[in-house]
Image 1 (cartoon, rainbow, N blue to C red):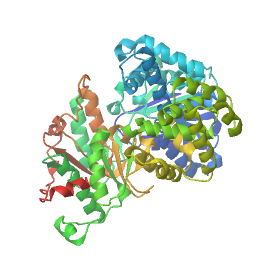
Image 2: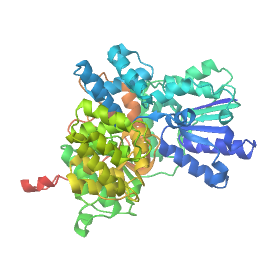
Image 3: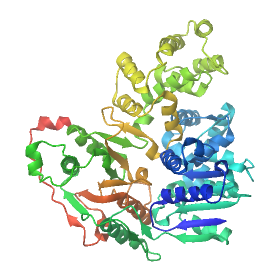
Length: 583
């Protein structure tokens, strides 16, 4: 049986859970015969938790395969060497340096990713000789990068494997060609295929995704049964009306969608004079909602109704850069927040070097991690790096005494070995953020290392932190804003990172011209995909939605219905110039 669930109806994760429960409870399917593919590790964890509650605990679900495409591919491939994004950047920079190329390492990796996910090199703006050099070095190390997981798994014959007897795939609209091929390969010889998604939420065109995958699947499998979802269990009627009014401008068949939730407050639009005033409005409004303001401020803001908890609120923006000012304003008002997503600080040399150093301490045979640490932390020349790699290759434990004889007289390597001997006994039993605190206390802090430490508070150990950085999608990576709140905090994330999530209250901030749709030099703008991204942001809200803009409003705001009401933005009080340093 092939079932294709399409349409703008929400509650898709719940639909997948119901389908799996039906297979187990009504059809007698064994859990080990079921594989569910999710878009994020967070969604996989949520699905597993809900199934455990439904089916009778962990043992009832233990045999199921639930995870992202990349995580499942890693399971299938077994013991493979997967490099981290930081290590991939080190390798990319090495390739570009040796070739005399002025291309930036991050741009190079983005182009490589596009090619590995279906684009041709010319379209991605990538010199094929550079791609070959990068691939050759990966192969020489016996390593794979993130995108290689998909292509390597495609080479495996999984036909008829027990775990793929019943295959279910969530967020089908955002799969690329390689992922589509995996769905077809994994379902071959199986008993059922069940995919679910919404073409109006296809927002990863830059990764090769296309909502046309639904049409492609039904063309290749004419026996597929298509079921359209037309009931929305998430958003209040006013929110749904606003979202449908916007997405209708993308054309296509009329979207028939009915909210099952009770009526809530009107969608609000706040227009501020500039970005700073907009960020202050968001912070003050959150303070009003949560009761986290003093008595005089609460009276001025006319605080009414039941107080919200911080964890009920999310602030969404098109880019991480837009979130920075909002984060500063929330911190200024002592509002706890968690920032989700892969941020620029992870490309900082100190951050990459420190992560690689701790990785090499835990895994002595990880020579690429060692190389990254030696280059970025100790400015080690290439010949000494090669000497250290040769000495450590194949090691499963550290023999510092033997290594000391090998590096004697080489200052860079002696310093590295001193640090290795010093830090090896300090790793045991400590949380990642404690280790990073001690590192900063010993060798100095930086804004990027501070952010890494605030990221580390969200993970129980170094391996879990490393795994999140290697395999995590936008929603899987979290950073605390200055303190150690792991929960009970406002969530800050990009529109891409918010996909698949929902919150009682959503602030969709920075809805301004040039930002939504996003315009940047040398990059064409897909207006329909940008509108779908806006639609995704609107439909993350369950009960209350507040849109904010500054200076020039986004053209998408003109597509909202007349039921959207203005929300006044109080003018900022004059303040001494020196107080601005708080921000």
